[in-house]
Image 1 (tube, one colour):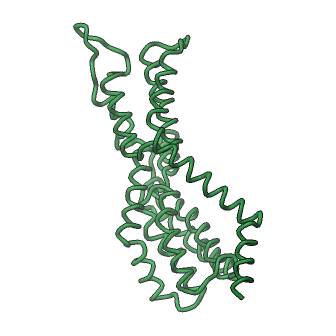
Image 2 (tube, helix red, strand yellow; image 1 turned 135 degrees about the horizontal axis):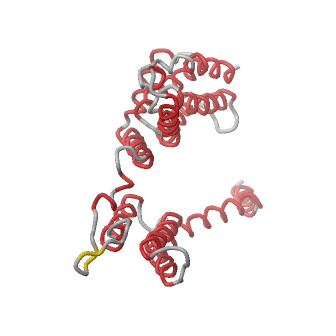
Image 3 (cartoon, helix red, strand yellow; image 1 turned 90 degrees about the vertical axis):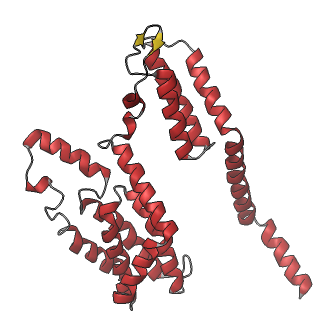
Amino acid sequence: MAVQSSAQTRNKESSPTAASQQTTTSGKGGFEAWGRKWGLLLSLAVGLAIWMIPVSGINITQHKVLSIFAGAIALWVTVGVNFAVSSLLITTFLYFWVGNASGVVKNGALVRNTDFALSGFTANSPPWLILTGFVISVAMVNTGVAKRLLLYVVRSIGRRPLGAIVAAALTNYIIAPFTPSNTARALAMVPVVEGLAESYGVKRGESNFGRALALAMAFANNITASAFLTGTIANLIFINVIVSAAGASRFTSWDSGPWRPPLPTSFCCCWSAST
């Protein structure tokens, strides 16, 4: 039996599927390790190379910003540092190297404008709202708020599979007003829903209940984006377009009740996914 078991283990390890999974895992880990080690140096090299290459049609300030942008892309792809540190680095370069949007120099010294360096983090900036959504979603995962909220709703209505699916969608509704990003909301909910599926004894790829739970979560994540003005950043952008074209009305306010149509739609999606 021991010989047969070891032979089966060797055959499993030498199978093409196991080999491809091992290669994929090692390749992914290798790139991530390489990025953590060399990503920062690579981004500085990319930015310096763009700065050294003559570019026609732009002034020196635009050339500086282009160099910073190229280095930032390399830094984000390689994940040489985390995103908080990369934001601090980019802001530092914008303040001390670029200074201001027009390249103004006074008494031989570059005029440095704090508002220019922090212009990407203004209150009306979509990237700032997206970043806030990710911060809130990470906080929900780390503190367990999303998990406790889902378990509380499941305890109330989740005694049957359909109730558990509706509970997951309802929890998505509850946190939607505070996460202005579909991706951030999914980041908070997916691990919790996976834990819910495991608590029901769901095996990956072998349960229709697990598939229904995943589909309902995907539907609810998108539907809740239109339920509230702060459900996703696209709502704020389009509301601004509508207001500038047609003027403000009660339909462009946060509390105009836009959640009413998506709510029954979400319940219908949960029911159809569970059948």
